[in-house]
Length: 373
Image (tube, rainbow, N blue to C red):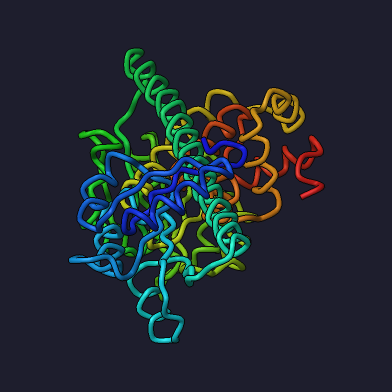
């Protein structure tokens, strides 16, 4: 971390001028390092790890512009503040400095006020950059941990059911999606999974009367297909087979349709551009939730009672779900991955015994969750 006032500065200038600036900065609480030429600075910078670099544009042999460009090519110095030291103030020189990667320009002769003002701005930028990196690291760590926990829970449940011999062959039916053969779901659903492409919703209803009816199933509907009425399909399945999860693919930005589908009883609504791995996770969660729901059907009041031990992330996810936020919006607001949103919602369905998002919302509203979102 940066000290309360000091930063670590590398000054690249001839020895006399560099030492003069270094002593001045040191007097105001900053750590200072000196390099007499650009070549020396490029050799030493990776080991010295300065917070900022002040570079004389007229450095001999390798000028300051070249030094800046070379530093910017190093991953460790992509965001490091660079300050150009120059005697020239014409617009062309400023443009060249900015293009080379400099953040600030300090014109000689400079006053103490000018120098300290630049150091203050540089320090603020360093603090902001480090805070952004720390937030990104925390979010990535949190998302990875939640993802691992959720996946571990689902995997354990599947293994337990397989040991008891209660795991029928998964059957995933795709309605109106020509791209189905291009997606490999087996790594998530298991090698015994069966993928079926349907030419109509009526075909699926006819199929439900056969032996496949008792299988662990999921219906994936392409809501962007011209010949598919996704809303009708979801509503009819909610009436005929409420325990069967329906996942609907919609076009990016079609919020109105997504909300209508969720209210009609869709298990989940995702954009058609979703990555293969994430779609496989949604399907796996849907199948897992449906299998669990057959065993632990609960009344809304019982489900609401089970919401008392939600984690902070689960509660916020539920609040955003009640407010009608889409998965991508929820992922952005919670600073977690889209995959984690799917897994955490599956955990909520499992905890409450809800069959789909619409039922989960009804349980949440009865419990008074989401009213303030």
